Amino acid sequence: MEEREEAGDAGGVSGKEEGRDLYEWAQALVCSVLAVVLLFTFVIRLIGVDGHSMVPTLQDGDRLLVLNAMLDNDYGYGDIVVLRKDTFLEEPIVKRVIATEGQTVDIDFVSGAVYVDGELLEEAYINEPTYVEEGRNFP
Image 1 (cartoon, rainbow, N blue to C red):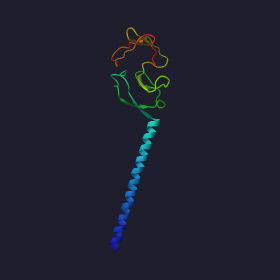
Image 2: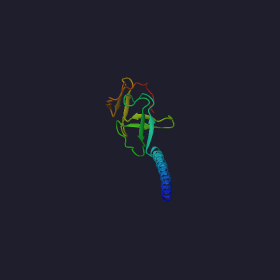
Image 3: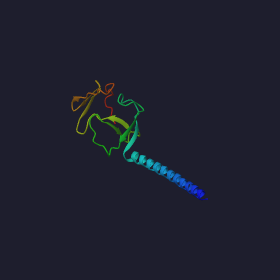
């Protein structure tokens, strides 16, 4: 009789351990989902590249993990940034910084050359010069 009681106690402990394991898995899952939601809400965003303007650096359809601007807003020449302005675009656009605050940008639409502060901008990362009709506004 004593052997049965011991076997019964062992079965009860095993059931409690299974319940505890299930609880720990559920807790880990909930914490993981919460961490991902908070991370993607306040720290990073997933952005898709739409178009060919950044080729060969970025291809159409590429996905980028982007830091929120409130965490990193010290942009410099050559940085890739994501812009969004609801007044003219609904989707964010991905662009490269060619000038910073206080610099002057001039575009020669005949030759396709871009000048920053009067100096020709060397853009080894582009496939072709910038040819657009005169009077065009760039967003």
